[in-house]
Image (tube, rainbow, N blue to C red):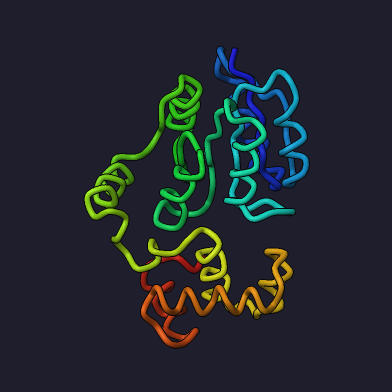
Length: 210
């Protein structure tokens, strides 16, 4: 029996996932979490075989939460189930230790298949993501401009792209305003741009600003 922890702050989403999981004979929802701290606490309890993790949770940035989960429970499989497209986070999530990446528009059968795959110790990715990963390996990670950024730089970049101020980014990522300014400068340099407007335009073109 695969015992699943659903980490998602939307009640309707959790209910939908629970129906799918509990309708599968060899799976059941063991626990639920609605924010980052609950996720860490409940993932640390005995009796959890897999965490089904949303990347948009109150209390922490999604990638930071994933990394902390992997640090605390390195043997516990994590399957990301999120509204964010593969272009936005899939490769970074896999590098951070996720066993698979699935978007919320997936059909129920695919979710069940992904859970089984990740629990078995293998990675679950779409064919499209597999192609992108292959390209990244061949290019040495030097593909799209935003893929040059570290995870923290990418977090700052995405927030700039949706219009967050430096103070808002500072509060969300628990960084000083000065540190945010330093990351912004690094983002502009790595992406060979000069202004926030250029970053916003790039994010919109590449569907990174949702």
